Image (cartoon, rainbow over the protein chains, first blue to last red):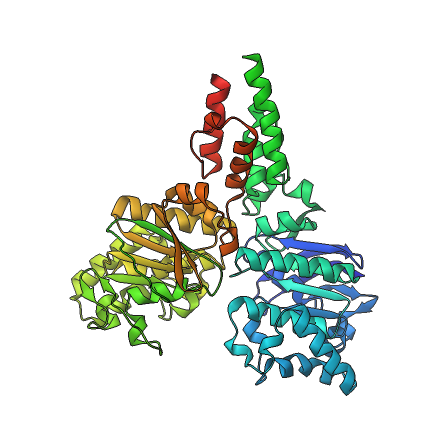
Amino acid sequence: MIIFENVEYVYPNGFKALNRINLEVNSGEVVALMGENGAGKTTLLKHLNGLLKPTSGRVLIDGVDTRHSTVASLSRKVGIVFQNAEDMFFSPTIQEEIAFALNNFHFPGDVIRKRVDWALKFMELEEYREKSPFLLSGGEKKRLALAIILAWSPDIVALDEPTVGQDILQKEKMIQIIRQANQQGKTIIISSHDVEFIAELKPRIILMSKGRIVRDGPSEEVLTDISILQECRLLPPQIVSLTSKLDFLGLKPKLARPEEVANEIARRVRHLVNYS
Amino acid sequence: MREVNLEINEGEFVVLAGRSGCGKSTLLRCFNGLIPHFYDGEMVGKVEVCGLDTRQHPPYILSQYAGMVFQNPDNQLFALTVEADVAFALENLSFPRDEIKERVDQALKIMGIEELRDKSTLELSGGQKQKVAIASILAMHPKILLLDEPTSSLDPFSAKQLIDTIISLNQKHRITILIAEHRLEMLLPYASRIIIIDNGRIVLDGNPREILEKYDVIPYGVSVPRIVKVVMHLKKTLNNSLIPWTPLSVEEFVDIIRRWEEK
């Protein structure tokens, strides 16, 4: 379980990036932090493994106060995949890259081999195992970064803007991976401003603006509240924007699959045509 | 790239689409001479930009005709102030002082960032940085603007603003636009043409409305706007005459439905 109690964080230059954050995330939840660039999403993520410690207030990870723990020991529980995957790489080959953290955590040799194999397979990177991480494409680099984290199986997996620079097929793959990891019991925390991606995943959404949490609720509620999305400089998903503009047909803003919306429009239009 | 044959006319607004790694960036780099002059590898065939053979002319000449905006503006900005960044290329090309000033003023004005002139580029948001990057290219008075996923690190609002500016560069200033971008829902209503690339080949090339009506482009990694999916499904269930053409934006679609309602 993750608990933020009255957390404030002020960067050394005086910028207050987090302002009175109170938050509880239960294990096994999928949560998306959404908001414009600079809202505080990444700063919040960096508090999960102690990379940043609160200026005031406290963060508890399964009861452990991050101020009294180290990044190394918190990382056993929390893995963060950063937006720029390349920042995580330094090994000559992909398999060594994945094995690095496992070695550091003193896993036995045969376990390391098994886990590296599993992670390469899960992320569809087997054919590249001897290649340099820096030779991968953008999408593959993202998958490698995630493979590195999943290999040591932390309970909490945090993903910072996982869809940036990804095409639609890679985004669909990312959704599958997130669902699978979640089914294995992992808590998933994603920072993202990709509304269409989040609309597809339908997690609990925490909306942030200027270092504060301004809304916390299920996707169906948050993503259909157009005015609060605009306040946070987000645009509603296209389906929500469509249904909200069809109020004259009797539709309400809602999050639904394109087929469902099409069927509903068809029903109402037939009704109109029959009565005209 | 394999067997690419392509002609783009002045004033076109071309969207390049396809999965990551399909060759969109490679194609863009052929237009300002980064290929074949800067990247290793072999280029066969011939590319002409504004009548110049890219093999015969170095990037610093070609970039005066076709300027490139990259994904990450941080790779493109380096001067101490916005003004110095926008003036940099002109100074390098030894333009006269007065002309540099005039062109910088104009570029900042077109991009709507005059108030950022004296700021350090380090203080800017991602969206502002991209606008400065575009301004520094506009100062060269290019005929063609090449954009390689310019909004990928921006939040939706900033992305929309940037795309609106790019649209007006095409409509008001007649600059030819070639843009690789995944946010198709914002671009397609304004694009004159979409080129879909798969595995280095051009697989589809035409008017966006027609391409989306006729072909299933999802296997090429093209994110079909949700609105188009709704329309396609609706066409299957309703009489086709009710939707005479395929709307590409929510506004266009709502217009069509309003017309039924009025009838």
